[in-house]
Image (cartoon, rainbow, N blue to C red; front, side, top):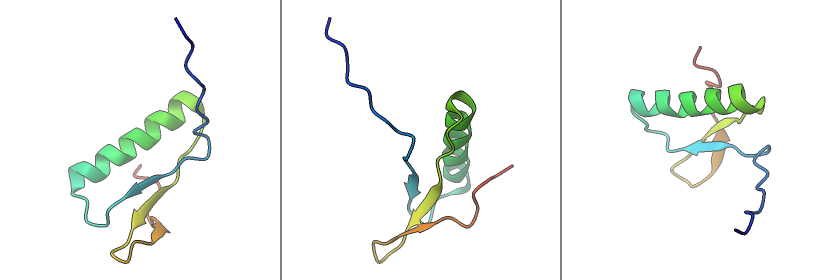
Amino acid sequence: MQSMPIIDLTQAALWTPPNLSSPEQKAVELLRREVERRTNVRWPVGVRTSAGRLQPSRKQDGR
């Protein structure tokens, strides 16, 4: 069996559309928290604007 290459996700970020529903926002936050809990890496969350630009989310922590 051949080993898989390692992917470094320490600099990853979560980018979402601006109009997520409340359950979708909670799912993104759950994913971010679980990654942080398991790896001690905190992914920033950002929003893709209608102009296609990426901007950091104002709400970084749903706790």
